[in-house]
Length: 123
Image (tube, rainbow, N blue to C red; front, side, top):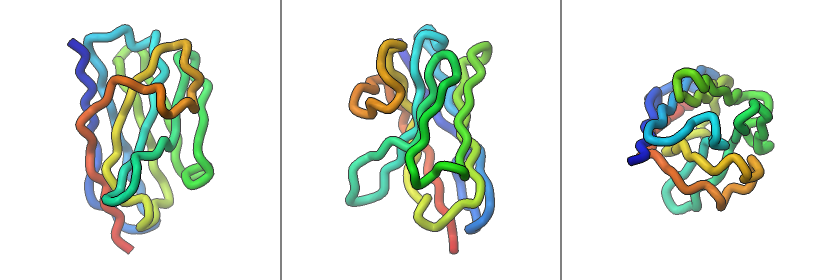
């Protein structure tokens, strides 16, 4: 059974930093493209950043230059370093996995999901 568990969310001040982690079990982590999504109330979940099995990464414009995605395949863990946080970064952050053959930015092709971790940024 696949389990995806996020951690590291919390409260931060604008301009501050947080680091999210996501641990996946029950799957061959190296064989999966991984991504971070964000959802705010009343809006659809949006893809923020993704990383392929070999480390190639994609960022959407709103987080480019502020967020860094990385993975440690030996630990089955995905990370999201979030710097220069803004109030609009507030939301529930989800980790998701897709098969290796999925292009990183095909946001609708992810099929393993975690329960999310809340990030709140105060201005």
